[in-house]
Image (tube, rainbow, N blue to C red; front, side):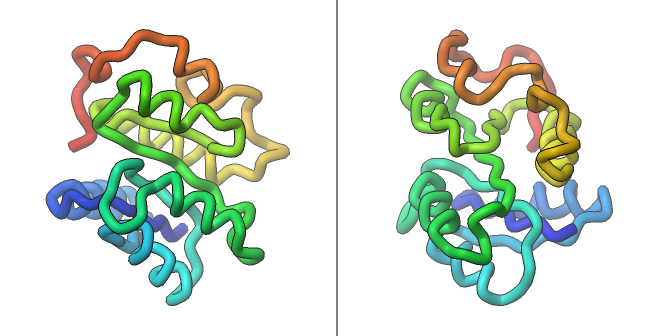
Length: 152
């Protein structure tokens, strides 16, 4: 499986590439949404993991653009962010978005999301990892993920 990781923080991209490749996944890196669109043209991708707030093209616009492309309309997409304030949660609450994970969550949570999103929809559990839909997350209180070990 090939994962396109989109994030404007170079250190995060490198650390996550190492973590994901250690699990056996191929990883393609992009610094922003515009670069991610170019990477999609270069070869097949099975999953996009994208930061939300980035310069040039943010993750929300990237998602909208990817969904408008016929070959990528069903490409699984996971948003990640260090922010989990109400504004961020509202931004990813749209039912068209498959998932959201705080960067401060344990790496095992990321692996669960990857497994969930790479499973065909008809075979996925009713609820995504964490037992809640993305829409219900905005009703929870903010914070930075409690005392969990961050994924970076």
